[in-house]
Length: 381
Image (cartoon, rainbow, N blue to C red):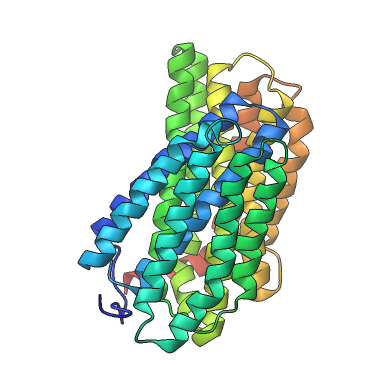
């Protein structure tokens, strides 16, 4: 395999899109895990699983940003990783009971293949190879702890937390020197996985309707849910998806890598968590439109949307050292709505959340009209 085969910007390839298909199933499995255990503890465990699944996806997104995914060796390795990731996804609904070892073993294979491929790509690039070797112990230790957690019943949650801390904190501590990224390709990859996550919300609405039958209430709930999903989509693709590649292109070297790590590898995780929590809430709401929303479902609905918006504020702080005032204010309002959402029918709570999204986008259409017009003119040119 040619070392660091991709030396310039390139579009996302069909092989990368095929690899991403496994995460469509993985996100659905996490929603199933939440549905089977609709408690706050269940939400916590679901977030742990999402964080674990997110790491290999983001790791392979960076890998195929560096090497040519259409190369035969890389393609075979990607297929092997896809199969292992699918096996891990199969185990998600019972990952904290009977299938923890299966998940851990498959997850370790995925992580080991990633490190091996990156090391192979770094043979002719000493800086890249040193970066891979700095990252490898943290990644493999985290994957190993998840495997060990499968054998230990009582302390598995704490081992998962320790494993994810090793993975995420270790990646930050390993530094940003030696890596190289292509901004447009990386931004495109993350935009596409966000679309995949939003697709889970559509699936959840359909599952909820199929379980309860389709009446007027279910149709209204589905429409309101799609409006909220549109708000989630618009918040990303109407502005950030255009500015993101330009933001990365404006810096070079380790600073670009550190910015991409913080904004994409890390800050996109709470966006994905927020979308999956919203999908879980929608499955419950569409199936119980006339009932009061329970505290867990209300937290998932309002808290998931709030977390999604808070991620943008975190990105704004990272880049400009200031909050995104409109989105931060909307996130706070959504959190404050949680107690009220438990005291009203599910359909009414969903309508309130949709109203917050409508108000936010109306505000941004007015306040950011000049910046949006500039972004579109640059994109068109």
